[in-house]
Image (cartoon, rainbow, N blue to C red; front, side, top):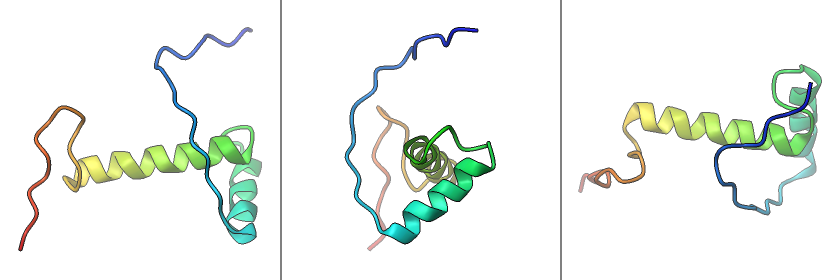
Length: 71
């Protein structure tokens, strides 16, 4: 089965991290639930973290009013 192209535009992101974090990402890949490589695992974790921040109201969806900060 061929992979369908991503419908969303993507942007490159360069990320440096520690060897320990890289090893954790590789462990996640070995579960089969976080992508095929450590780069995909990192992207999935970032996406899930952003989804949680949206649910919590910490950040707002693009185009919505910015969150109000307390003093």
